[in-house]
Image (cartoon, rainbow, N blue to C red; front, side):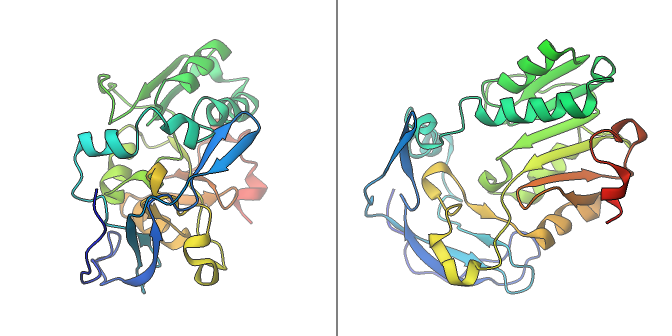
Length: 260
């Protein structure tokens, strides 16, 4: 891993517009080592990388890792320290979402099929099966497991999109597992209004854990709209995509909220 050499800003991966320089940071920017209730910021690595932003759609990204191969990611990002640096990797996110899905679909779980895309160790799917889901599978494109067959009522992807070097391809692959009445529930933090002030001090700009693609509502819309999907933003970090919101999911998001 070497310092990013000076270069012309790359094209936006969402809309193809030439990007502009946004900010430069250390590879360990905003990264901490988590131990129980405590965390310790990592010392600077000495390796600097640039983030760029699209002046049209606002997509914020670094191309620092675009030429890396799987071995590079395994060595520098997804290594044995990764679970200690990404403090919610070991089941916290999966457990919280499973509770939400159980409360939203408890009366229908036995009739629904779930796919956790990018689900790592498979904790979320295991919990959903324990809760009574008809089918709950995990698929991680970076793992060794087989690709599931067919479509699913609910496709979830937690804290994955910000790791994608190719957001268009990632969204297209999510949607290959959907049918006309499927929901896609995913989490990724959207840029705050103060992003131009915070620059790389925004906590989500964390290259050590692989955060290479940072979105806003417009970039997410541009990713889903070509596939005929609408978006509902539950929070700045939680999002649901659908073609036509299905009646079977009315307990998940009440109709009056969808119309707001």
